[in-house]
Length: 63
Image 1 (cartoon, rainbow, N blue to C red):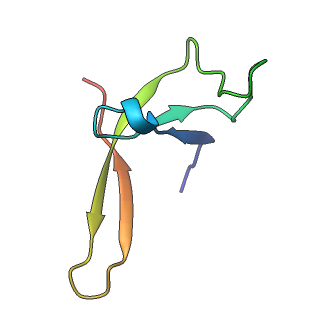
Image 2: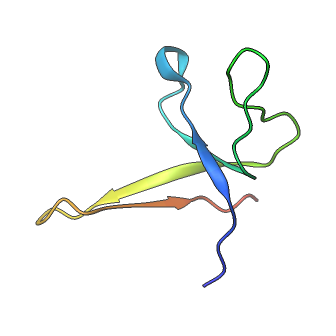
């Protein structure tokens, strides 16, 4: 399995109702926020098992 580093962005109070996965290692900017300028982003889909509540996250392919 080939995995690449990335991090999850959550817009907090001003979010659009979804999280995004951003490629690359997390680096913080001058004011403590994530540096994400110029990095690719993918919307995250989440799926939960109705029996055991196991959660899996997948990114949507960019079209």
